[in-house]
Length: 309
Ligand SMILES: CC(C)(COP(=O)([O-])OP(=O)([O-])OC[C@H]1O[C@@H](n2cnc3c(N)ncnc32)[C@H](O)[C@@H]1OP(=O)([O-])[O-])[C@@H](O)C(=O)NCCC(=O)NCCSC(=O)C[C@@](C)(O)CC(=O)[O-]
Image 1: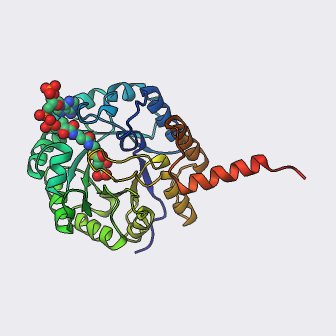
Image 2: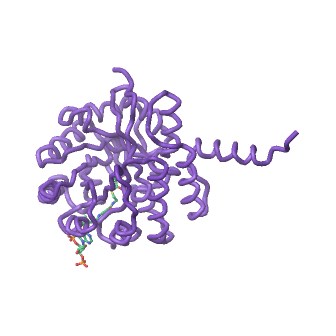
Image 3: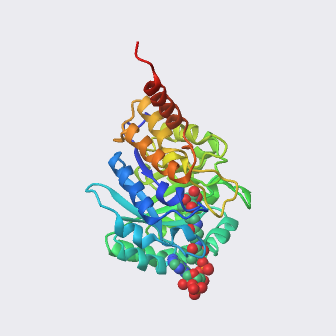
């Protein structure tokens, strides 16, 4: 299949990226990050999650962050929701999209959302119905689609099962997530093929963490299948609090650099995106975890230091 000519990237940095940070990140900083991402051309931003603050304290300011965003026409703002309590709170903040998140392994489902896969679907079903009744689009995320920190290998059959269950309860989009970044191209393609048994190509996305440095090559493998929607996190922020040892998501800057180099449009201004990544990295007192951002920031510094002849 030919590569897509255009790719949609969802920046999950404000949510997936920051949820695991130990230091408090003020709502104002999260809001500024969202503003910088939309100014860089991101058309979908995963802003926060309406989960239990006892489980993920960093997202406790969800309503404040959603209320503080200067919404830009054409940009979609999504939030994670695990149950009806979360949905009711999220609804008041007017998201364009909600994300219900299940897992392809029983062990991860228990650790992450404290219930079995079957129970998670029972919880999600009324959430999905209520969201759709309110005109809110529903994405589903299938975590640990190629490997689980508690179970080990995850088979494509596990992904297919969760994709089928999500489809049956009315989830409109299926995100296939390599939560701990253990996937390699053929394994990731097999997980995608499993999801494709229940979702159309246009309703599937990839979400890759970069623990083993495989996220870009896995993205390229999915591009070969025609998959044109991906999550990524500015400055490579992130990690799931219930997937110890996993590093951040693939850096949005690296994905944009690769796609533009392949002649694939994203609508994103790489320089502005790098500035957004530097903004949040400076706040967190670290360097952006992006090879492309590091190279371009070094180039900028060298140019600034160059002595005119
Ligand atoms: C799902 C629960 C809530 C079940 O947690 P539980 O303890 O089984 O829930 P419960 O219904 O028994 O309620 C216990 C307490 O939590 C409260 N509660 C219950 N629900 C909510 C809510 N929505 N918002 C706020 N509070 C809530 C509830 O009111 C009660 O409060 P208490 O009476 O003790 O004071 C919990 O396990 C949880 O919050 N888990 C979230 C874990 C999480 O956010 N993980 C990271 C996101 S997933 C991810 O990062 C992966 C992804 C998507 O990026 C893709 C990938 O890479 O894999």
